[in-house]
Image 1: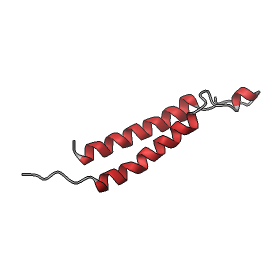
Image 2 (image 1 turned 90 degrees about the horizontal axis):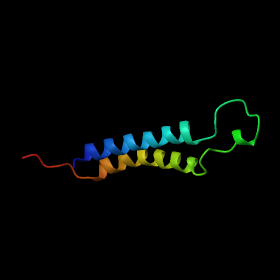
Image 3 (image 1 turned 90 degrees about the vertical axis):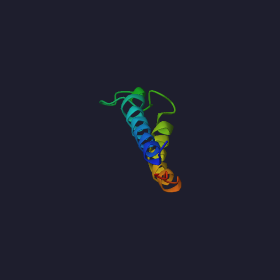
Image 4 (image 1 turned 135 degrees about the vertical axis):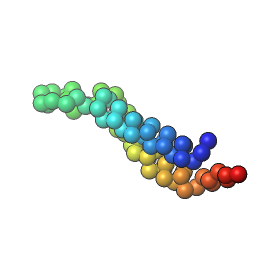
Length: 72
């Protein structure tokens, strides 16, 4: 696999994790009428968001450290 494909895959997976954890797994949107609006729907939703951010930033490291394929 080329480094460009690996990097692009990491970026897409990272942004997808961020979007899913923020939009679907975090605390519900709306007027806070009780404790249910303060707690995330899934306990580790903030961790998934952070993992998504880390994947996006690590994609630049992967792109720089993987050697480019030699063209023949």
